[in-house]
Length: 88
Image (tube, rainbow, N blue to C red):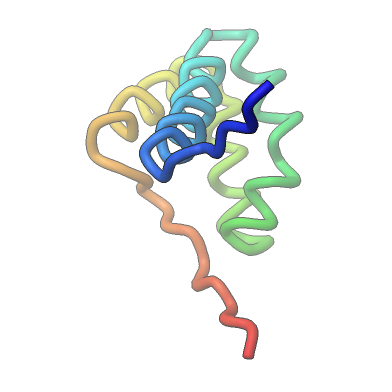
């Protein structure tokens, strides 16, 4: 068999697809609450403790989280991620 490497376009599509899938899962009214609670750790890791808890708290409120995530699909995050540390 041939060993196929993933192209940059394929990697971006894969990563972007996962992000969209998480957002869509959060948009289901009461199931979205469960998804938001499960993803609290990743929100804290990406946004910091305060902003991550705030973001997850908003997502966990059934119809408010639905509206927030629907807008974020098109506009981007309301609460931006923290700066990534560059390894030297």
